[in-house]
Amino acid sequence: MLIEAYESTVYPVTAPDPVEAIKFRMEQAGLVAKDLVPMIGKLNRVYEILNYKRPLTLAMIRRLHVGLHISAESLISGSASSA
Image (cartoon, rainbow, N blue to C red):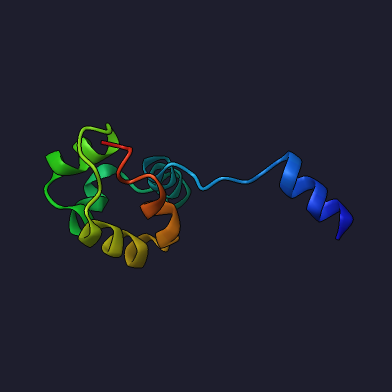
């Protein structure tokens, strides 16, 4: 417990950036942008999300959570700041 307390104060683990979490999951699963169309919308919308031009909506977050099995907390954590 002492080591865990030390690590949590000295090396806090923060939630990943939502777009980076999506990109990481895409890499893990061998997905391309076209594979995200059912979860995000048209292909141009997918690229807007991946290039930080548009924030994730709640509906997108829900579909990505179910479709890619990404923690909803990771997707919500920075969705407002990723715009």
